[in-house]
Amino acid sequence: MEIKIISENKKQFIHLLLLADEQENRIDTYLERGTLFVLYDKNMVQCVCVVTKEQDNVYEIKNIAVQHKRQGYGKKMLQYIFHYYQKVCHTLLVGTGNSPLTIPFYEHCGFTYSHTVKNFFIEHYEKPIFECGIQLVDMIYLKKQLSVPL
Image (cartoon, rainbow, N blue to C red):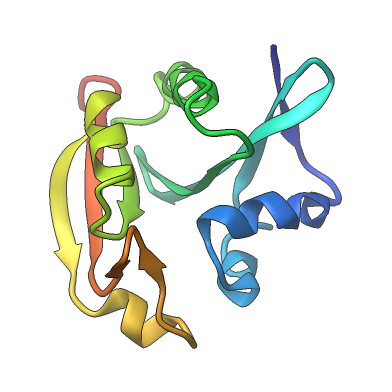
């Protein structure tokens, strides 16, 4: 297993990024300014993740998408991200819908509730998004402390 940072031609991974964020123009708002991490296993892309700097010592996971779920790739990617940012990041944020698939995953990886952005998915997406039969309405932000405050 190997994780690489991709700095050029990031759109080549759009098919995977769309698994986690269904609207390409939303991905365009963070892809170029973010750092794109790609996890390869047996020379095949298994997971992608985009992280942006939001302010001093605060970074945000904007997108994490896994090709084959429940194989440990998402957890491995997050562990890598935690290690990679531990010296420059105090708070790592991740926003997600109120989904029974994603929130428990992030909580298992050490994230805790931060705040909610009401009506985010209704105001920023052209079509309704459903996950596990639930329409996503509010963006739920979770946070993880990576280092002591600088």
